[in-house]
Amino acid sequence: MAASTIGVAPENCVVVEDSPVGIEAGKSAGMYIIVVETTHGESFLRNADVIVDDLYDMCIAEVPA
Image (cartoon, rainbow, N blue to C red; front, side, top):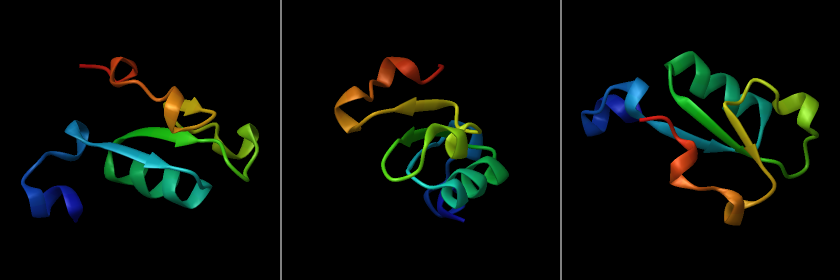
């Protein structure tokens, strides 16, 4: 719904999340998922495209063109 509201195709969106439910929602929408590992261990976040320790580790270069 968010992608539609701003007129961007879901496959051109990046979701930054920290929970398994958020990952599932983003994947269901067809979006690229970057996960910040917080309270959930990496095994719960494995469906993400990229997992980072914190927002400082996130780099736009990690998102495919």
